[in-house]
Image 1: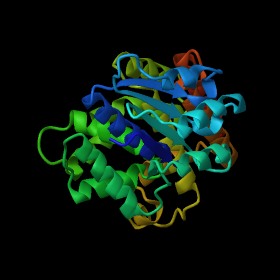
Image 2: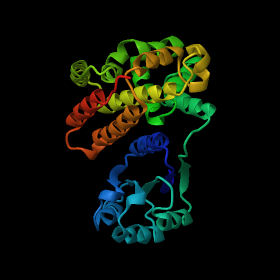
Image 3: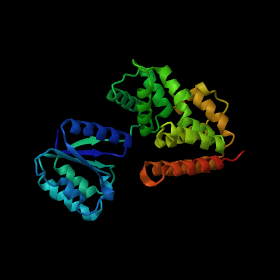
Length: 316
């Protein structure tokens, strides 16, 4: 392995995948791995993580969100860059942009292996990403299955990544086909996060809270629940701007949604005003950040978001 890597770009799903692959390689090489979030470090944390090993063992530092590194901690990195340790692997993770650019330029001067994580905009790029995710897990998916999954969830790469993991875990051995993708949306898996989303968007607060508790008790990740609600709200927003006189199968390609998703969103839309949709999107974005670590109690954050969204609808 190289001694210095730079994972660069704003697409979190690509960044997560790169970190996971490097972590797996480091573990295979029996590396002792330290993970730090740059914004949470205090003076001395990075220097300690980069200090030479007394036993010459291979070690690694994964430093995430480098753009958030406090100014007073930057010298610890620049000093290391002037004399890197051959027994050390350092993985810098930076979301791109101008924040922390001087330090980023200093890292680039030592010629790290750069892994770009720019947003995937083309459908073909997203489909290639999904195909690689399945292969990472040791599964194969048919072209039709990949296209169907991207069509349903392609606006959020992290949601796609979570869906691939769930499908690969639940699907029977063999090639994953379109029928399995359809069951992912309409069958047993939907009775978790998507069940919560349905009750929430229908204004059924008691049903939504019961479904939420049931989903959490059966092991559904809170992130999957916020993703499901966010996906349902995006579907509402997309369909709200479409001509109601056009049949769902004719809109499917234009909106990047399956016909059944369009029909479902149309049934739910009569309860929603454009302002209510916008407010709900803000609420679920906050909840998503909270369940990923910004809040001390992710369960309360979910319950609060579900309650606010269910109450934000306006009959028209």
